[in-house]
Each structure stands twice: as C-alpha cells, then as structure tokens.
Amino acid sequence: MSRNASVSRSRRRFLIGTAGAVGAGALGALGLPGTAAAAAAVAATGTVYIASDSTAQTYNSRFYPQAGWGQKLSAYLTSNITVANHAIGGRSSRSFIEQGRLAAIHQVIRSGDYLFVQFGHNDATVSNPERYTSPADYKEYLRNDYIRATRARGATPVVVTPVSRRSYNTATGKFNVSFPAYVDAARAVAREEGAPLVDLSAASRTYLDGIGIEASKGIFLWLAAGQYPNFPNGAQDNTHFQERGAVEMARLVSRAVAGLGLPISDEVVPGAPV
Figure 1 (cartoon, helix red, strand yellow):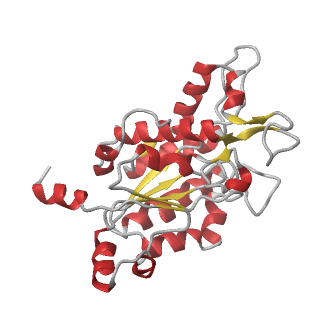
Figure 2 (spheres, helix red, strand yellow; figure 1 turned 90 degrees about the vertical axis):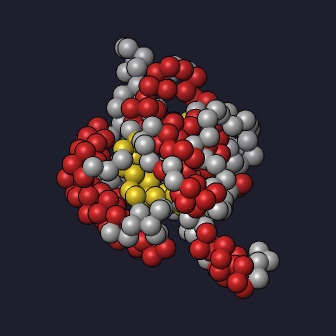
C-alpha cells in the first residue's frame, strides 16, 4: 500500500447513519467550526451505503429485540468506515428505485464509497404488484441502476444475495435456498458485470445448518409471550432477525467482504463483538 493511500485511510471518519451521509451543516451542529467542518467533510470518505429491505434495516428501541444486519455491520468495520444504512422494510429492487431511495444515495455517494445492495424478499411477492419484480427485471435493475450507475459515480457496488429465511427440509433438517431464482440472478449479474459478490444466501444457510433448526429460533424473531415488552404476544417470524441474528448475519457479511480484495477488505475487524 502506498503512503498516500495509508494517509488517506487514516483520515477517514466513522459514523453510523440510517438516512445517509453527514454533510457540513451537520458537522457544524456537532461543534466543528466552518473551515474545520469543511475539512472534515472532505476527509469523511469510505462510506458504505446499504440499499436493502427489512432484513437489513435499522430499528429503533420500540422494536427491540428486532434488528437488521445493516444495523450491526459497523461493529465489524474499523473506525475509518462510515455506514449509512438506507435499508427499509417492504421494498424491492424496483420500488426502492421508484420511490427515489436509490437516487438519494446516488446524490451523495462518491469515489471511494461502496453500495451494498441486497434485495429479493419483496421482489418475490407475486401477490403484491407494488413490490413484485420478476427475476429477469430484478437482474436488469441490479445491472443498470445499482451496478453501472453506481460505478458511473466512482463508487463500488457490492451485490449481496438475499439472506436465508427460516425455511428447512423437515426430512433432512437442512435449510432451503430462499428465493433461488433471485439468488441465481444476483450471482449471474455480479459475474457478468465483474462486480464484487457477497453470497449471503449461501453463508447464512451454512450457518443455520450448523446450529440446527431449534437453535435457529434464537436467530430469527421467535419470541415467547411476555418475553419482551415490545412483543407482548410473542412472535414466530421466520424472516426477520432478533438482535443475535442480526449480529451473526453482519458477521457473515463482513467475513465475505474481508475476502473480496477491496480496499475496504482491510478495514474488517476480526472476531465477533459482544
């Protein structure tokens, strides 16, 4: 690594965001004077933007213990990296674009930044025309809007295959591939475009196979009645994660990122947070 690259990386700033990068005005609100704020804004590079759905979303305390993997990703990255989590529930690759959410990211993303994109859960909802996106259209949205348009802004798109649901084969005890057509499409477009790929579908399934069906309840939002004030009636949710599950999925994402050979790969923190 060159000295200039090392110096540049050492100047990066850390912030966990749920709605985008922090601008100079917000820095001023933090007590930084005008020129210092401008300098800090210039130095705040290496942001990871997340475009995704409820499985990656950041949840506030009213939803505890529900959490998304994007909410926990910063724990696995050094303080040189900013995480701006734009993931929001109920969105597909298409509706995220149509609602202007990707455009909001593209307005602020810049050279040296990353866009992690994970969709598939809502794309597969055939019964909901506002969400449903065919696997073929999903692939082209990833190609044109998430990969090529992000690269045109000098940033690096990272394709993330849809994380597994708590769906398993009762005969074998092994977990099923969730949304296989979308997993295949994501892998294919990443290969065709030469985009970095985090195969969270495979990694999460391997992890779930390792802990087993019963233990997987502690990963997903399976809660007993009265266990948590926010879920007085309990929950049996095979899609969303409780905090431990979000942490484990973020760990899997970071482990994959560490092996991508990107500049951010060197910013992954080994080991699991408490």
